[in-house]
Image (cartoon, rainbow, N blue to C red; front, side, top):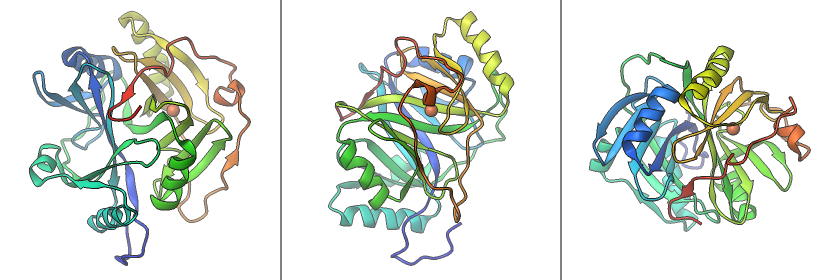
Length: 305
Ligand SMILES: [Fe+2]
């Protein structure tokens, strides 16, 4: 935990907290994320929103009905109230517009306090917050989900956004594939990457990932998806960058989801140096697989293009 309240100390993240998604058919997506992905529906209002979780916390996913499917925002939890304050002050001081979420809206989102801004360049809609409500003990169903692990975007203005996140927002590079993608961790969260940013002409979702605790979850998912008509677009395979075994599949709107078993962790004080990995499919999948059409193609980012 944070040991100092110095205003000059860079703010510290706890983790990738939750993802807010726009979906074109709320009830259909609720059923998919509950029955196929294995999340628990926590709270919903017909035609307005649905909260789902895969840990003890209130939610990892919020679904909103929309004509256009994609990401509404991505939210990072800060370690403490002081970290949230330092982040808000620091980002504001850079001239980046940051909007404090009202107390009523924060309560509705089951967090103590939150603020929202757009990452310069890519215009990714970010939220930073503290203190999400906790629920009862998480009980896995069809898959032993342990958390939401990361979100990966293809972004425009990569040369602006990635240095900004590293220099101004306390992200760290775990690995890089030059000209292609940066794998970033929200310091000091140990996971290899909580955020991946690929270079593109247009900002859009690439995929988001749930961690599973058992390799059997990957195998069982293949059969569950086959029976349920869920397209598997890549895998199973193994990433060189994070060493994780992966399986990619698509939600009813075509957005790409990953199950991941295993993930390299970084020590806060003595991390290994970031590597510049070789671009190519053999780096994406050391087992020699290749993605199918539809992989990582769908998912607008609200307010960005
Ligand atoms: Fe991933």
